[in-house]
Amino acid sequence: MNLRAGRLKRGMEDEAAEFTSSLTFDHHIFEADVDCNIAHTTMLAHEGIIPEEVADKIIEALETLREEGVEALDMDPSVEDIHMAVENYVTARIGEEAGFMHTGKSRNDQVATDLRLALREKIKLISHELLDFIDRIAEMALEHTGTVMVGYTHLQHAQPTTLAHHLMAYAHSLKRDYERLQDTLKRIDINPLGSAAMTTTTFPINRELTTELLGFSDYMRNSMDAVSARDFIAEAIFDLSVLAVNLSRISEEMILWSTYEFGMIEIPDEFSSTSSIMPQKKNPDVAEIARAKTSTVQGALFSVLGIMKALPYTYNRDLQEITPHLWRATDTALSMIRVVRGMLLGIRVNRDRALELAGANFATATDLADILVRERGIPFRVAHRIVGRLVTRAIADGLGPSDIDSEYLDEVSLEVTGKRLELDQELVRRALDPLENVRMRMVPGGPAPEMVRAAIDDIRAFVESE
Ligand code: ARG
Image 1: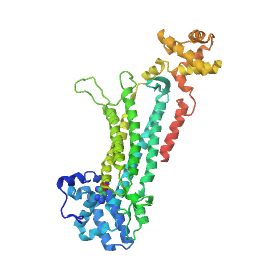
Image 2: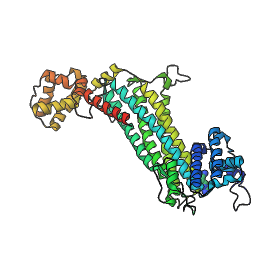
Image 3: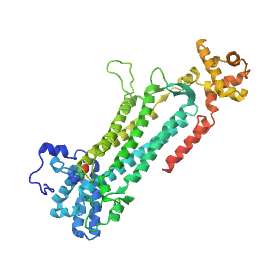
């Protein structure tokens, strides 16, 4: 049945119909489309635009369709899209009167409405999973406030920190991703229905009513904008791209830390693979795929922006081509959250190795310099010079941080400034001890266990409040 024959005498050529149909990805908006039709039909009857009995029949057919599911629809490409498939279904059930449901409505405002409804649900689901991930990272961090490890800048040993502090860095980045999505939701949650093709309709429709029935917070105030805007999609995919990047960086660290060279963690078997030829291999395939899929999400963003950039107002069929990118982005991001969460929460941490690395390569040097400033009133730049020379010399002498004492420091100081420092032996030892280093960083946001515990409490209270 071709409901839209209109001025065309012949149907579209088969390959062209397949080429232009959105049916392969319209299942994402199936429920939204049924809801949208029910709300519109309810409103039409409420305003006396269509007879009550007809509306009842249409709504009953739509309710049956919702129960039967998308499989009940004829999804042949010649049908073009889900809006036609749904109307065909209702027509097959109740006859010509089904046509009343399209009064004062166009597929242009309908698809815009469906996309907003469906995306709202997807974002709520993603947000829920994300919150759970944040909470569980915080829970994991609680066990590691004393797990000392080295922190890196330029991927070179920089300063000691704890695994808890590092995990909470993940948690905070994901919290921002969550917040960005909540903010985007505000702009998604506005109803375009009632805009019809582009200039609303002469029927006295009630936009407040459909807005309320569909649970939107408001309706769009310009009908031309309403049918042509897809910036809410670009924005959502941008949020998901940043989220994917953050998950990818976590994945990257899992890959690095699980290497023999780092030896800091072991990824659970459930999130690893092996080699078909090298029996000793344990490969971080899940993390690698997560890292790669980040590009899928980013690609979706650039595809969408590219489609949008030169479109004249208002609706152009090009807009349809945005949709598959959107669902690819949402579904990829959702699966990434789930697998990266499972992988991270299941890692086995080698605390001894983490501590060993923290004390192996002068990551504590900043603290030694700080002590010279604090105890001897030397400008930091001079202290930096003395300790820098000390490290170079210690490495040449084959000494590690734990071999350095006050005398050794004085020899270097004499060379650099002509003066001895005569620092207390215990002070020097403590400055060079990674655990002490961490404990002394009592600044909010820092790695001292008390500070990290406070940050954990804060973030868990945030999760609780959402
Ligand atoms: N399948 C279309 C889409 O996704 C629905 C709107 C079609 N409108 C039209 N005038 N051809 O955008």
